[in-house]
Structures are given as C-alpha cells and as structure tokens.
Image 1 (tube, helix red, strand yellow):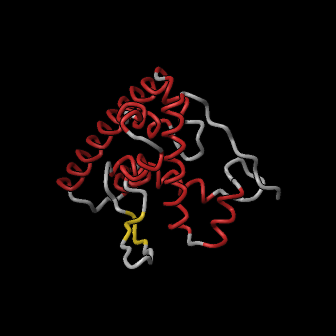
Image 2 (cartoon, one colour):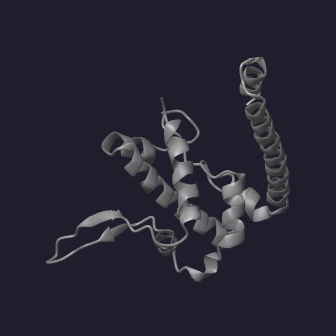
Length: 183
C-alpha cells in the first residue's frame, strides 16, 4: 500500500475528488490494520495463557490460532476415538459400499468447516516442506506423497493431525515427534 500511495501522490493528472477518495480509503485501511493488530495481539495473549493451546502448537502444521481454536471449541470427551473426531470434522471419505465392494468417495465435509480448513491448510504447509531429513517429514508422509497427489495427501495428513489432536486433548500428553526419514 505504501508504494501505491507514493504512486498516487506522484500522479499530477489525478482529479482532486479521486485523490480525496483514495486518501479516505487509505485511512480506512490504516484503521483496519490497527484493529487487526490489536485482535491478533489479544489472541496471542490468550494462546500463551492456555496450556492446551501451547501443547497443540508442537504438532507440525498447527499454529497458535488453530491450536487456540481447537483448545476452546472442542470437547474431546464427547468422541469415543480419534476416528470419530476426524469424522465429526469431515475428514473421512464418504462410503458407498454395496455387495461387499467398498467404494470410498470424497471427504464428507461434515462438522466444523473452520476447524477442518485449519487442519487442511496446516497439512498443506507441512507437505510443502516435507523432504527426507526434515523435522516434519515422517516416513508415512514421504511414502504417501510418492503414491498420491498432494491435495489428497493433505487431507490424509489433516485426518492424522485430527487424530493426534484428539489423543493429546484426551490424554494431556505432549506431542511425540516421529523419527525423521534419512536423506
């Protein structure tokens, strides 16, 4: 925005009304940026004060805001297992099975869209940096990426992350990093 403001100031043939309107829009953007910074500061303070949220950020792909979201919005005790939690989030495939033949479709997209979206975006970020020898590169993920497209692998990793989150919420244990794949 600073470069755009400089360009507007340098433009001599811009009508005064347009210059005023753009200045008004610029001041509104400044106000919104200040409000967003204050909200982000408050959320980060809330994250730092919440032990469960701090615990969840140890999972690769789960950031402070996602962890706070899960810590405040999810009661893990209402789910019998991590699979049920992942299904509640909509991270398991729809099943259309008949005659003993199992057919799996796209993810069901049931449950909380924001929580599912946070997991899939986090999984995408992990996949982007997944290489043998890196902290986030488990053997399971490297093998999955060899066999499946990246988007499908992201949903599978999000499913796994949901199960890990459920386990951590129910047990209160810290995240245990899997041994990375050698380069």
